[in-house]
Length: 202
Image (cartoon, rainbow, N blue to C red; front, side, top):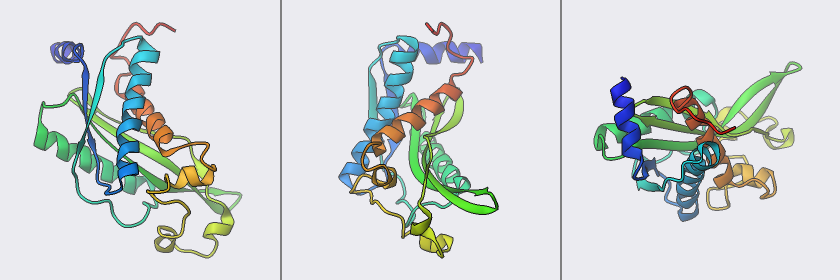
């Protein structure tokens, strides 16, 4: 295992190559996925560890995203795990990392009442393992989802892929889809490399 990690890190010295699952047909959504994943890698490697490596993100066609927004974390995590596993199975060692990212809803019961929140998940798979990370959550206003079941909610929330996504819509554009993808990617990398990379300057 130690030899594998040493060899893996040596391969990264010339630059990081990431295959990104890109199921969307919308150009803006595809761009946000690629740039958001790249942002997360840059933040982790450059700001966190002062390693100024080039990060290349390459889109990979996967199955189409299911209609509507996923209504549970389990649904999103299962989908992302399938996508990264499929890319690694098909592409082998062509890339250092395989990443997939998607937004979804999750429910919490607060004071006896169900509340719905939206956040973005990223899954990263590599030779050293697999990890998931999420962005921050934003609550869906009750007036938007009152009286709707889960199937109706998938198609009733504000924001579209073309318009920048749900979180961008809820925050009035102050937090973009690219930013949420970058944060969830950064969090996934933090878990993936915990205890593996040494020499954090802070």
